Length: 476
Image (cartoon, rainbow, N blue to C red; front, side):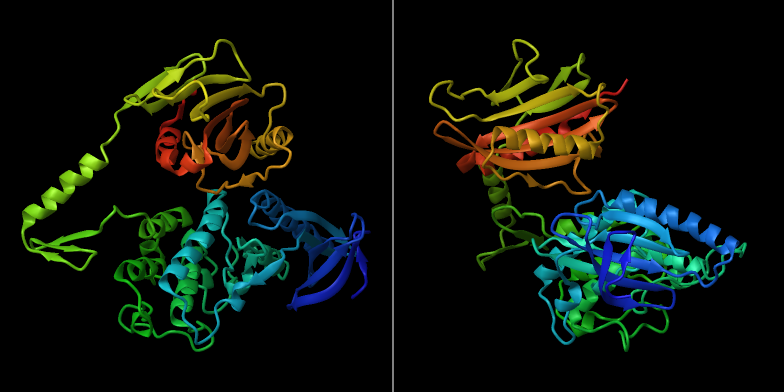
């Protein structure tokens, strides 16, 4: 099969893996300039009778549609093609440069807690997108998670595709799928019985975290379990904080109903571990205050003094509500220090601009938060299409600047899926940094841009984030 050309353009280069009913190979696309690499997955039905092929075609089309939908995420390989040839089925996907996590999770080597927290965040960010589309990966393990050359995590080899292959064994059965899909060591009980849920993916990610912390491969050998509860016993194999250990324990509960219900919920718990603390950390226990400098203070009144001082240094801003009924938007802004400015006319869809009250109009770099609403009724673009249009517009105005796509599954605007772009631009002597967050709803594009001098960007970012979070689209 090496050297064979499939679909008229995909030339097989090497086999990566081979199973009872599937072969995965690297290939080059001879139909594109530069002959880029790709991945070809071949599925061989055990029978070529018409009924088998008909069922196989239906299942194959469904799974291809799922992969097409998922591939719109930057950290999931794009589906390039799917076709049937010589009574066999083929999927062609984007090749991901980099290495899989087996290169990072080395048996006998333990990763630091900070590294594992970051790894969990990276995996769960992508998995949240999958669950949001009501799909389950079903085969999460280190070899199916790649670290791309830019450092980002990419999920590959979805187990849903394996379901196609498995169902082709017995296409005429009337019962639901009962063959367990997944890899021993990473598969929970309910999935082994052919009944996977979102909780099953959460279990696999938890096992990967335990593997990273302990340096122990879950299969073969694996970790011991409590004979009474069935829970995995692992904390004694590493040094880990109780907070992280509790999160991981909840991810790998024996009873799936006790796990996090989705990747988004697990991600929320993990992110709470890495959230920023106040300038000092204070623990109050039985009237004793422990400060990070190593000083124990017995007098409870000292804690009160510190709290008052912190509130004085960091006073809470008063946020007022701004409404624009004609455009159907509302937003909260810090009215003590900022003011809304309405444009004189409809300038590029700009609805309102917020600037500091003390901002100088002459010889001053821009510091502003602007809301735009653009009519898309003539184009009816999707969110992804509009984001690409926004990137192109930014590049046209700033040819030499790099645009960073910081969109994540958790990125929202007015509780709707949104994109997030970050870039810099030069305006006279001012070097500016800009964040744009936008969404598409009912034939309209809503986006907010935060612009600040690069040196002061971080100082005003919390205010901008609070305003963006408060933004609401009023749908009639």
